[in-house]
Amino acid sequence: MVFDDRRKPNATRKFLWASLALNLFLIGTIAGSIAAGSTILHSFLGAPPPMPGQDNDRPPGVRMLADVREKLSPDGQAVFDAEFAPVIKDLVKRRDDLKKFRELREVLLRDDATDAEIRDVFGRMKNGIGDDIGRILNHMANVAVRLSPEDRAELALHRPGPPPPPR
Image (cartoon, rainbow, N blue to C red):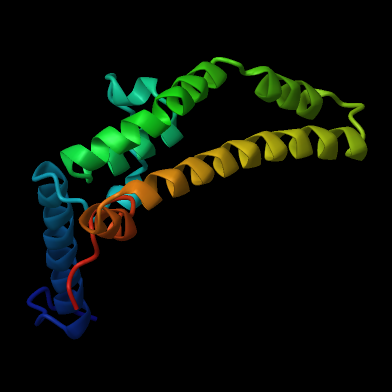
């Protein structure tokens, strides 16, 4: 039996070469996208670490309120500042009080923690967070009734992040 080394390319060999070319193309595309700073893969890669600065030193609620304030006119900002100055100071001060989070951690890490203890500590956290949100919403209502119609429109259109693209 004689083997012929001059075989003609068959379909499997063509398929493997095409697959290799496609894989190299996709890897290059992904690497180029990442190098160019594309956000396509950011949801899979995880969030970037927070940058040090003024915004990271403030609680998320305070950052949200500051973002709302920036959307208002100078007159609206004055109304906002008059209403929220004591509230923001209190929220920043309360952030330093991590007692509820320490209690939660201690209860969750205990091997003998009962269901009632776990539910109780979560309930106290929920009540504290709910009270803060209720206070903020009451003060936002006080601000809204004193704003101009233009500032009310800005307040109504405010949402976190950039606006959605037009349809």
